[in-house]
Image (cartoon, rainbow, N blue to C red; front, side, top):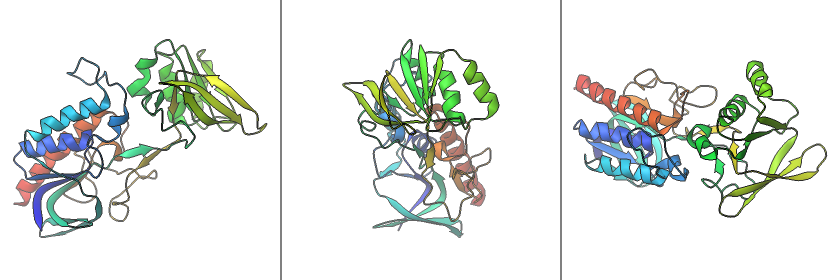
Amino acid sequence: MKSYDVIIVGGGPAGLSAAIYAARGNLSTAVFEKALIGGQINVTYEVENYPGIPEVLSGFELSDRIKQQADKFGPEFIEEEIIKIDFASTNGVKKVYTDDNEYLAKTIIIASGAQPRYLNCPGEQEFIGKGVSYCATCDGALYRNKVVAVIGGGDSAVEEGMFLTKFASKVYVIHRRDELRAVKSIQDRAFKNEKMVFIWDSVVEEVQGENFVKNLVLKNLKTEEKQDLPVDGVFVYVGILPNNELLKKDITLDKSGFVITNEIMETNISGVYAIGDLRNTPLRQVITACSDGAIAAFYAEKFISEME
């Protein structure tokens, strides 16, 4: 049974950053990632706001660079799916289980991320990163003087719609009901914004395009009528789902299922940290995920030193 100082669950930017800091701090470190290293950022078409990298990179290119940097410090990358974590510490050690193996760790950093709730309509998956986005902060600047649509009616949808008006010439807000769910103060500002156009009682039936998004097929839920809406991009805000299946029994979550941590990224269990999109955080960006990873790894090292 192999033992590590730190086991990191997830190989996105948060997990990779934690791996850099942990391994560089001379901690034996394992990163578990069952899928592609880089996580959600791999589907981002262009990244132009990561400090220190003035050239525009794809999300895949950026995550590959971070992985190469992590490799220099020697963490072990394990392509196995974790099926269970025993957080009950025995002599300061926790257990991680995969289908074939068991592993021991003095500390655990959870970086399993979150995923957007999808529309599940034809064309959505095909055009992710090619006009379909789930992050206006990430991709909004790519739509200068273009027409975009925002799907949803909650706080995030309306606030991000207003953010997009800084770049886009017009922002359609498409909502399945006849009134917004966003708080009134946000609604008031949105209705005063001349660039925002609201389409009520409607859902997206299909995303269409060639190399990039060109059109949305909308259906009015009251009249059953369909219409085409030419757009250059569509931003989906119908919810975010944290990847918290391994944590529900032991880790304190907020009402939306995100992990509650303190300022050092520690959960309600000593020596267990949560970072990145999985965490209850006001901003989900690569830079904040990397910051979370650095903080968690630094304090994991301190935890181990004090334990020993």
